[in-house]
Figure 1 (cartoon, rainbow, N blue to C red):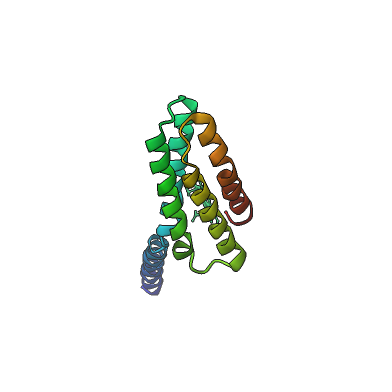
Figure 2 (tube, rainbow, N blue to C red):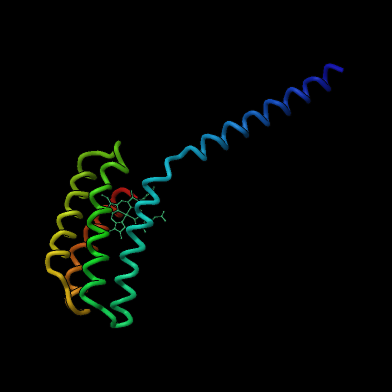
Length: 129
Ligand code: HEC
């Protein structure tokens, strides 16, 4: 009888533990990753444009502007990040602003505008991803 009770108790504790773990996992803030996935989407779109040699001025501008706006949200998405991380986020925003202002009208110009941007992506990912 006592053994059976202990087994039931063990099962209940196990189930409760699983429920709490699942809840904790699903509560992980999805915002930072979602922001980066969206950033990656726009970078991919531009990469595809260069690859297919279809770099239209209006599309380039639009995609770069999206990336600039997303970069501005990085500090809010990673509120607990250390100062060097925030500096890199600022650097990304500045490099995207420069890219937007350069308003690339063809593929070589777009590729050149993206180069300093990609460097900042890489710099941050190497240290913090
Ligand atoms: C200031 C730091 C920083 C900069 C700059 C940065 N990233 Fe990230 N990125 C991160 C971190 C941190 C992660 C991991 C996020 C996570 O999984 O929660 C990440 C993850 C990613 C991912 C993977 C998302 C996933 O989990 O599937 C992509 C794609 C990405 N970044 C694209 C970019 C692109 C493109 C740029 C430049 C235009 C960029 N990032 C610039 C910090 C940065």
